[in-house]
Image 1 (cartoon, rainbow, N blue to C red):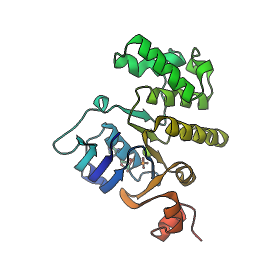
Image 2: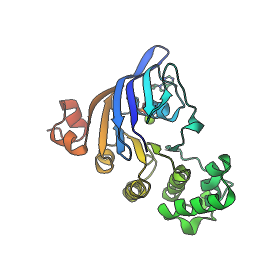
Image 3: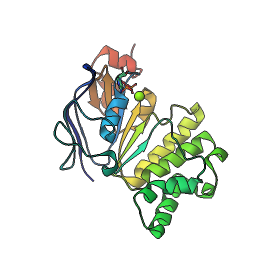
Image 4: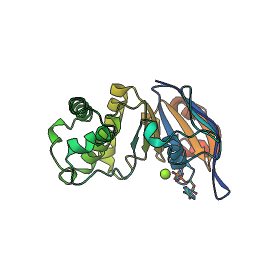
Length: 242
Ligand code: ADP
Ligand code: MG
């Protein structure tokens, strides 16, 4: 398990800055939320962590390894980060267990080990009984849990989430929040969780980075943000405005 550091990270598209001088140190096993309104750069940050985008300035460090900078770039498939994005594309023609096993197949993990890991992953998301179903035979929440199982089957150090609950209804979101908590407890993985929903961030995360127009406004525990919001905009955004 290793510390994840964003050191002066910037990202521009065609000269327009989208992420500006971002500095964050994420401790191993921490559950961190990146919170901010739509368009503030959350997904871009996650995509840089995932290795889908390069950085325009600064560096991303994991333990003693440089993942991304002007001079280094570790490709996505070599980072062993789990990912759960909003459109949790499952293979429609594969059963639940085949979907979950897929990353292990890519990694050429031996069959016996594959079976064991898939079983464990399905246990964590409580879908053991659905192993032989097809995605079309599941509810939205169950499909999202399959995506979660698939993201942890390779035993990643870090799991990245991009608004994983955005397409689910209110009731299901509450249930899924429980699943995320259990998932975090069981795996001990570092989690970086993008959301525009302040209540989701406040209830799930150990620490929250609040972003506005590509800039970090405040970085702290939910209690700190609530007790001492840095400015009126932030107080309003987290629902503390008077
Ligand atoms: P969020 O996830 O917080 O809603 P994004 O990271 O998706 O925000 O986007 C931040 C800004 O960067 C937006 O203005 C978006 O249009 C722009 N952007 C994101 N990706 C690209 C890209 N590949 N090319 C050009 N602009 C982009
Ligand atoms: Mg986004």
